[in-house]
Length: 321
Image (cartoon, rainbow, N blue to C red; front, side, top):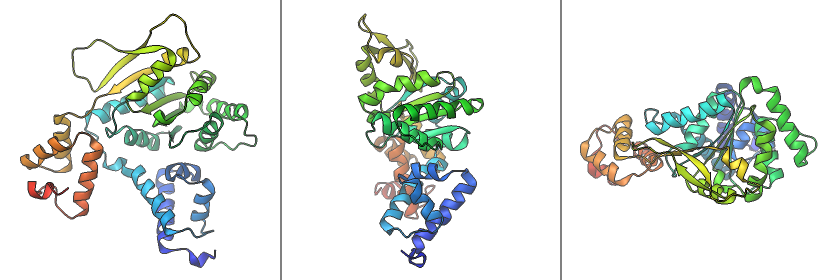
């Protein structure tokens, strides 16, 4: 298609990409990972090489908007603070951690924000069931590694070389929504960790059920360290339930396990106050209705889009959202 057939929407999206590249220092392959498209597609948009359907552009814009939502995150929330500390420590120690929690508590937003603000941090959101080869290939793409031979061994060697070259920057790989990974990938994950141990931090993030899945695969059980206090992140460990090991046991036992607690009433009240909601009746309704931050943030964005002032919103107005 001719260049003059490129729509205004695509031009607007291109300008946004250029701004993000300048301000966030993102490369084409990183933008491709965020938007769910190929690196060649991003290159064609940025260089005005080809026109794309508006539906595709809208889809990419939506995913980019979701990625940039870290600016709306309430950083005073205790879950935010603790998750930031966990991932920072993972990077500094170059160890392997499993961070689990219910949906909507901010895991993805925190991890994306950390990746965007720190050098040598690679964010990998699992959005499909990969083979081990495709999994390694995607890591190479996210890390900006150009590969000629695409066998699993060559891809793993390329990742190891990249990690060795950048070990002074304490590289970190964040694997988000890891509950989607297949057993075949988990079976091989130990090879990635063993080959890069002490050089690459690996932070695996997912829903609560993933810890139980891994425990069953490895013949272990999840045990929480004794504590009588309410905590933001409960430290847990994996205990053998039988004498014999299997191929997963050693790998899974090396995971440092953190279970992030769900928002309490006090957390939702803090969220409301930070967003400018002061009406006690509105806050009461919010506490009854919202059980995670994703629900709260979605409602806040809808209210703001309607032009209603959060500081003066009434219970009647709030009940419509």
